[in-house]
Every structure is written in structure tokens, then in C-alpha cells.
Length: 459
Image 1 (tube, rainbow, N blue to C red):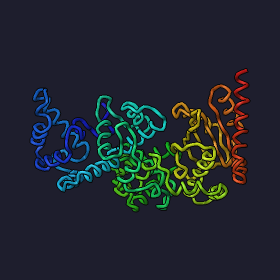
Image 2 (spheres, rainbow, N blue to C red; image 1 turned 60 degrees about the vertical axis):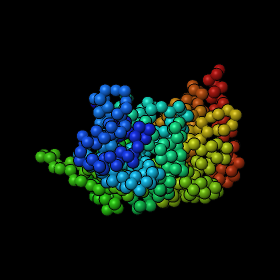
Image 3 (cartoon, rainbow, N blue to C red; image 1 turned 90 degrees about the horizontal axis):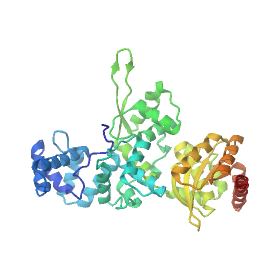
Image 4 (tube, rainbow, N blue to C red; image 1 turned 135 degrees about the horizontal axis):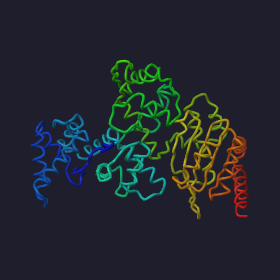
């Protein structure tokens, strides 16, 4: 049976136990597993109408959950986190206790993946269930969650207790940011990282818990997710050692095997990484549009286009996202969320979701690329995502142009489906920059193109 990527949570929710009391009992019985379970059974399960053996099993589940949530060691002693939470309980700082525990869940136990899954399903407008969350975690992050387990529900309840989630899977974004104590603006290439170092960290943030992780596995994930090019022989010198010097990871050298050389390094995320890298990524996943970007979208389009010519990849990335937001907001569309941020692709690509609040509801799937040519593979990818995102319109915005095969494929899709594809290229953007009202001329041109193709299909 596959091991769960989220902590075991049976008989451990705040609806079943009081965390302060449980920590006190754990402190009093340190090193005495049997005595800890006896006290848990006596306090929480003695009045259950079940056999004594089943009561003991429930108490054992609570003890295992304490260990799975990394508050108790295997031999029954409080961990450093367990001690910290115990001190809060002794000082009767209940709010701080649950806030710090939630922070621990988000940054150390995979809670950010749960938030990401909920955000993803909310954007798609789906009714959220434990099964759908489990499917998302497995499909996007290879995190297995047992079908009959309470791993997801228990974690959700603790995040509810801290005010991050609501009963019906709403996300309190302000509370989330407050607990993490960081913002998106701290996540950028301002650390002086190379593209390979930055993408290695981004891939590290998506690795399922617990660490350590193989340096080769993290690099391969960066290649799969971001198309990053690594010289595998030089990863230690060019990526691992610099990141360790910056205090973002710690390394453990792999052991040598006869005839096979040394194994890959084991990589451990540091507290600095969790606070300064992982936290901002999470803040981004929940859809917070940072003030800097909001201000950027209010600038003239010409200035945004100037930034797209910058040698600073971070500046280009922010400008590309601002370009998409600027153009789509001119059409009265509401921003829903970002799938791929331009700052994460070196200023080359951004994917966003919008919706129309008008009488006829529509969802707009937008890809914006700062590249010379958009090929057929880009159109194919977005069309493939359409059923998942439930969009009615796909908009491609590029500072370059579209390949002939890309246009032909878009035509084919519109002839044979109800999907509308809008192509906006560099010359259109320049026209809009000179005169913002040109956006409507561009959209009218695309509308006429779609209408002619739909008409041809109806005939």
C-alpha cells in the first residue's frame, strides 16, 4: 500500500481533541508511549460505546497522528515544534497556538498543496470534495492520499481552526498571508539567482513531503515543469553549492557505490527557504494580485511594452503579466487567477483566467507570450486544457507573431467546436498602445474571423 504524502489524521481533529491538553499529556508522559495512550483513552474515548480494545486503538491513532504531524518523536518525546506549541498552551495563548500550528502545517507538512488544490477547484467552479482534492494532489504533485483516510479532512479542520479555510472550502487570503507573514514581492530573482538555481528552488517547492529529496529528482522536475536546461555534471557547482551558501538549502553527500560513482546529493529545505520562497509561492497560488503589479497595470501600455524589452528577466516577466491584465481589463473582464506567472518563466510566458460578469457568462483562458513566434504546439496545449478549465474563449497574446500552422489549427478547432480562439499579435499590441480603443477593432476582427468559420461549419 502506498504511503500517504499528507500526515495521518485519525482521531486528531480539533473536534475530537484539545491540542493544549494533548500536548500537556504528551509532556507529562514523555518517553512512555503506553502511558500516553492510556491517558488519551481515559480522557477522550472512555465513554464510547465500543470495546476496550477499540478504545485503545483510537487512542493509538491519536498518538500516531501526533507523530505524523511531527509534534512527537517515535520514542514519545516532544519535537522542537511540539515544545514550542506546548509553551504557547502553557501561557494560555490559544490563538497563537493554533496560528503557529497552521503555519507548521502549511510550510512543513504539505498544507500548501491542499490550499493549491482548493484554489484550483474553486477557479474551475467545481463543488469541492475530498475525492476531488485527492485526485488533484495525485495528478499534479504525485501525492498519494488513501481513499478511506482522514488525512485531508483533519488538515482542513486545523486550517479552519486558524481561520484560513471556511467550512465550505473558502480561502481567507488575508488570514493566510497574515499567518505566513510574507508577500509575493519577496519571491523573485532578486536573490541574484541564475535561471537554473531559481527553477531548482521552484521545483523543490513542488516536491511532496517529507524531505530529503534527491538533487537529480528535483532537477528533473524543473526540466519537466519549466523546460530548464541543466548540465547534470555541473549541478553541484552551479546550483547546489550556491543555494547552500545563500542558506536556502542544506546538503548531505550521497554515498559512493562500487563501479557507479557517488549517489546524488540529498537536499533539505531550510527555514529560510520555507519562509522566503515557499510562502510567497503559496501566496501567489491563492490568487493575490500584488500591489506592484496592480500599479503596473495602470501605467500606459507603451511603458509596459518598453519593460518587455528590458534585459532584466524579472522586470520583463512582471511587464508581460501586466500586458495581459491591461488588455483584458479593457474588455471589462474580471481577473480570476494565474496559472503560470511571467516572472517564473523569465518573462517569456504567462497564463491567466478571466470571466465575463455580463448577462451571458463566459470564462476566458489567456496565454501571453513574449516570444518571436507562437507555434502550433502552444495552441494544442491550451485547447487541451480547455475542458479542465471550462473556458469558452481562449486568447493568445504575443509580442511576436503566429506561425501559419498555428493559425490553421485554430481555424480547425473553431470550425468543429463551440470554442472561440482569439489571436492578438505584436502589431495589434503596438496599435493598441498608440490608441487603446484599437482593442475593440482587434476583437471585432477576431469575432468576424470566428463567425465566418462557424458559419462555414453550419453550412
